[in-house]
Image 1 (tube, rainbow over the protein chains, first blue to last red):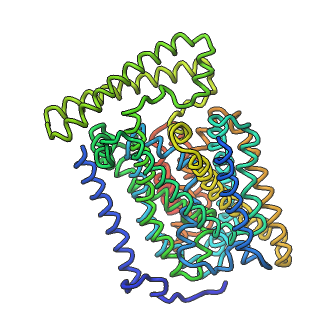
Image 2 (image 1 turned 45 degrees about the vertical axis):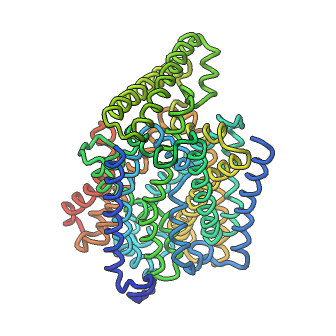
Image 3 (image 1 turned 30 degrees about the vertical axis):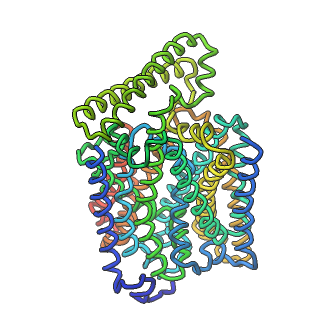
Length: 45
Length: 558
């Protein structure tokens, strides 16, 4: 089967230099969302 | 439904179908038909995987879940962003580099034909049956509540998508997914706005959140670990991660969506953004349900939202018993109104003692109403053992039909159809591509022309469409089998994921060990389910770990 070498920065949004950074932002956003949900729950409890 | 609602519904659905056919016009080869010639940008990938995952039940059941159970269902999606990261690192580059049409082609490259065919059979079995249910589930609700004929609703739900799926293939599906997501998002925002608008004049959005919070409906995070509880942060992060990884990584209905990306980077970005957007989207849908709950604190909610079943009950030998329950319900509703008014006043005056008092009164009224609903369900079951008693599916649609203005009703019915069409189209396409690429081309006709495979894929799409409508038609007669088919995904997904993880990460394990390991693992998962050892979400984790464990033990076989 034919193989294709990826351009490691192709597809990245502006201001993000590597996919590692993009994944860190994804996991960080998940943590922020969980904290926000917890704060929302506690605030209105 | 009014004439204007019908016009809105017909125009919306016609627009989606015509747009899908228009955007995929021109000569096509098998590459275009199955993976859109790998030409689509990240936003197509992102919204296509979102539309594939979001079925009609998402928009019918999730607000009902918010109404009855609060926000805790959102935790189910916490594993999704993590799964998207793992997919982007491992699955996407391999599938792209090998230029495969289906995920299962990779398994033959890595192991042998036997593992590939075994996995394909598991996929076709689970996806074929669950797509039938994806047609049936919204059809039964629409047919019940709107008085439509169930057979024709099933046929309509299952066949409308065939028009553009057969003619335009993956490109048509992807373009219509964009339109469907746009319509769905706009309609849900409008619905949320309308619920707040319908609240009493002195109750705004924040007041509604305060009341919902005091009634325990903003329960977004639960740290308590309980393997038998479906929704807590641990089952969401761990069980959800495995479920989403196996669904997105090994289910062709999703793999086929991100294989359309014009490069590895575009597919990756689409998936990662799906991981970021899905949780807020699900949060908003649940929030609409919570706002509907607040609305019904100020307005009398029916004891049971499925009016067809209660009408049957009123004409049965249980009529007197049901009317007695309704009287008790009216009393509870009146107590609830006093409590919610008291709570709103106490909240605005910041009188903590009073807040606690009215909060307790509101919770007590809520518990009374839940108990009365349970008693009503018992009566309905006594009267009709096959009755649909899952009332949360009817909450949002009943609210839409009773309270929203003309035009918006048609739009929200169109949303249910759109969501259903999005997931069904992707399922038909994946079933047909897997049948042709992994079975027909692999076993029966290995060297036919491109045009021949294209024609066979189109015929196969129609064939799977007819099969799924047939399953939908007989779903009501399956009785308790419906529950079994609902958890079918969890019975097979973990094992399929285990096979793929062995392929990616255990280079010293060969085809024979993986094949027998996966069969043993499947038996283990079925036994866990049969003896009801754990909540179904954990079956994905067990299936995956068992495949890896058994294949590791048997690795000397190769």
